[in-house]
Image 1 (cartoon, rainbow, N blue to C red):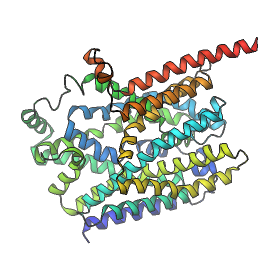
Image 2: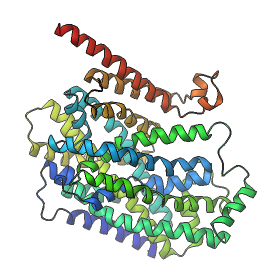
Image 3: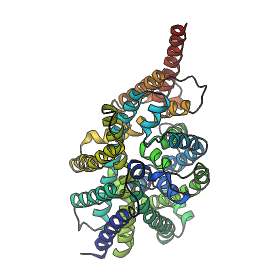
Image 4: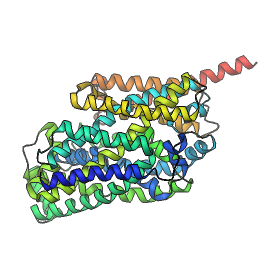
Length: 486
């Protein structure tokens, strides 16, 4: 057994112990298990929200995207910062309303705000469909990281099963507190690893960051700039907009916000998180460092750019430390996703069916569903079902469709009705699914448009359809209500 595998194993044990230890002194009722009894301060809320910045997608995908695509990868750096600005104004209102009405999930908010249990069920179903592929992504990344960092000493299947078991155990026992405690270890490790790699590798391999970019620009002209069409500046702007709007619409992200002790926590976080987002630059540097040193990686193999470069450059103990940080980027968001999916099923689907269910019954069912959710994700991870890949692509488009109805609900005179909100979400999700499964683009649908418009992210169409339907149906149902009142 190599030192790298020992370090990976110790990390899994550490995550398990931290997760279990988080329960100490807390009775795990519904609000305690799901939202930490709304008692988290600035640091814990920061760590939970930061967990959405540094997942396996970022650790592998951002470096791999920079390696394979060049300039288009910049969108990953930009959208979070815009999302935090939106959160500065939006999240305190959401948190205040959730606390007043003891809400513990995203569908709770929609159902209560619009006085529509049916809307809550629709939102829960959309959320679950989006969450399962996202959990599969974390487990897939976990397997890749362990196999690469462990020099093949542990198989992908074993790595996924162990990671799934660790998350399942501590989520059942400690709920959101387990995620928060493991997030502390994750962020300390990931911050250290990313800064080290982003500084050391360009200096070691090229003599510095500037020299690295100079060599890439000479060897790959145009690689570091946006293309005139396709993934152009217009694609970048529209993609940043869509992902920024959807950032806090992921149900586990909103659940993280419910954990706050007071509303001003979000304003403090909105000022600090954009700075923390800049650490992503160093992830890019690793991906760019691999461009000329590992020039043969193609397709999905580009996601291995970071670890292939690390394995080729650093000693096994360092590879083990880096792999350990990568493991935690899977376990922390994976635990939040698992708990949220189980809560949605118990609270917003079963709870809607059995309106007499108590909070104790709901939390017991949610805990029982945790291994079920994880087993489904493990199945898709190990079978490599291609449908999951397609669903993953549409997941962000799905959750972004919640944004118009949520924002409208924060303004008392917006005029949005429950029928309008429901119709807008259903149409937006339907259009997003159709566009993704058909592999359509704005250019293929409307080839007569100017190039700049054809380059827009196709999700814009789904969002526009959502907003139009929300406005039209809301106007029609308000008019019908006025006529009925007369």
